[in-house]
Image (cartoon, rainbow, N blue to C red):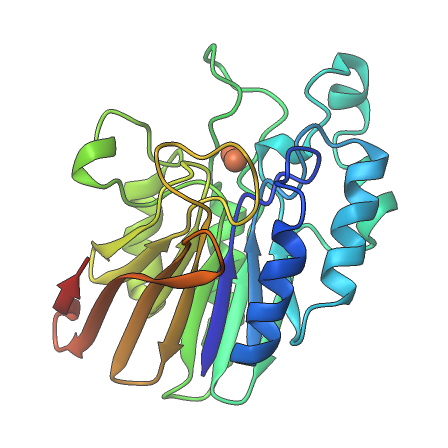
Length: 266
Ligand SMILES: [Fe+2]
Ligand SMILES: [Fe+2]
């Protein structure tokens, strides 16, 4: 199966024309699934959600989208507490925690963004026990050999460069459960940096910001992923001034003890 993994679109802070260029690229690639791993908007404004809905309507494949911390009305404290996801529901008419099964795969989305936390940084995310239980229940029903995908905005793996940043809350305990549930691949964002690796035997692919001006030292990028029972290929495609081109590549193979890196370049 072939997945276009886009993250951190941040409509409201998108580069003019970049979304249209991305659509052209995606239509040429013809994925089986498009994943949007959160921060679809910059400030959860109505007009931003309208732009997201128009973008989704033009995508060439079924879409699985989860929210990020920017999809909460951060600057409207009352709204944030009383109706944190009202803007998402009204603007997108999509589940906050969707699931999608297709030929040879199941993809499960969880909402890791929280309206507040017992720490000063409310942008941090978390996975709770009920969310893990739902993932376990959903993947238990799929046929053996199907690729099992989890989509969450906040990261389960940090690159060496980003080691000082936080993982999603309860990452380690959740990873043990995900491994037990035989999840193959986790797709995330939030850090606006693209990289891939293995955590607890599970492949983790992080995407940069696909179309926004909020680049953290990297151009706009998304991940082009091909996966089957035994191999997962992650290609980071970055903006080169004229289009999205291959900038880095990872290949993972399934082994007895979980997934492992077979090759990487870029
Ligand atoms: Fe973001
Ligand atoms: Fe984020």
